[in-house]
Image (cartoon, rainbow, N blue to C red; front, side, top):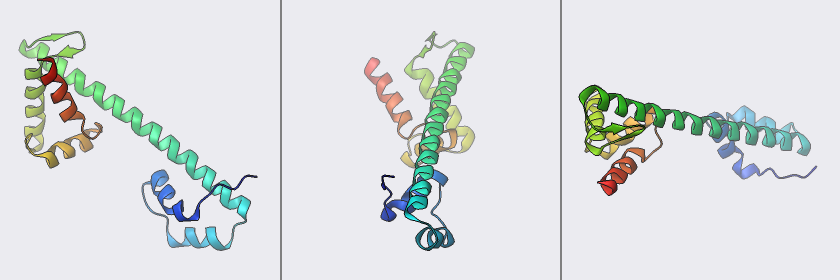
Length: 139
């Protein structure tokens, strides 16, 4: 068996896999009660869990983007804005964002509030600014 685990990175990998650092009893058990092969097995399982978590987060973000885009298109259709297929204009995007932020008591001009909205809706960090910049570039 090829030993690839790194004890110095174990806590970081555990956090990636489970969203929190390991408890001291986990680390004590890892250090004092496991063979090298068992440690490697724990490491490999943590890597698998971390990879699965990453894929799940990516899927959630793609879903969040799709839902947000549908929200913009629905808004455009209800209010007579320009929406063709899966595309919508800058004004529609800004209006939807203003409505969404107002509902949550957030300020669209505040970077922290933008990040908070992205976090709350599972949008990738920086997605709103990216969309606004793309729309501005296409205008």
